Image (cartoon, rainbow, N blue to C red; front, side, top):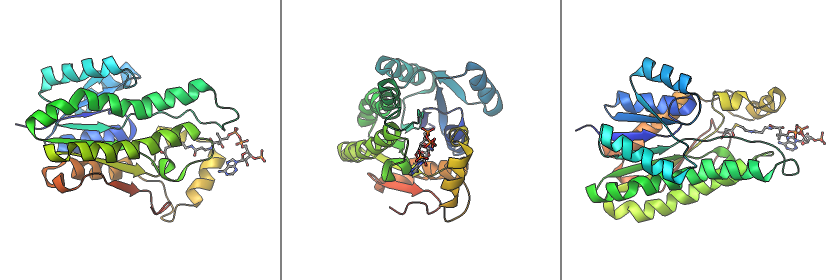
Length: 240
Ligand code: CAA
């Protein structure tokens, strides 16, 4: 039977590319989203991939959402924790709400999704977690104490989860994308973005498909010996 994957934030940006790449591998994909119903509907129309609405920051919503996916598509073998938001601003200007929201979505979401799915993977002796971290979790980024802390936390979360899952056939890995050509990066002020791109040795933004193909490799049957790793995909911007 086909493996079943949940991709959080799976209807747009990097998540959309991941959902499509996994579907191309013959995996049954559930694309989670929290924002626009209309965009999700168009995504499903375009790709044939079912979309499921819940907020990954909401613990109970993750338990309920994953139970619904399992009932409709089958037990969840693969979780790609991709959902993420930015609320950029220097520390002096950042509100507690902007801090907390980013921590709850970007880091808390991975915990909530793991709580919803780990036990089933353990029972069946197979599981794959891929967390989408960030270059800014590795190197820090001016104007992003919230985002950098959450993404850095994801890298630690992944290594701990990898240790807990190893003897049950469950792997956990992280990808640390650099600046990828998505709506999130397009929202960076043009002047700030131009300075960032000037520091990327390959001289361009990355493409979402370049992240998605790596996720596909990590979740494949061949990926069983890769666990606890962080794959940097950033055009050479930060060699870590
Ligand atoms: N290093 C040092 N100083 C910097 C700096 C940097 N990287 N960026 C800005 N500054 C300085 C400015 O020169 C300015 O100094 P002066 O007051 O002396 O002139 C000061 O900081 C304030 O700058 P702004 O006027 O731009 O302040 P702001 O509060 O309006 O905005 C900012 C600051 C939010 C950081 C804005 O510059 C910004 O959005 N920067 C980009 C942040 C970023 O890279 N976000 C990534 C989003 S995409 C993503 O997160 C995906 C991923 O994983 C990679």
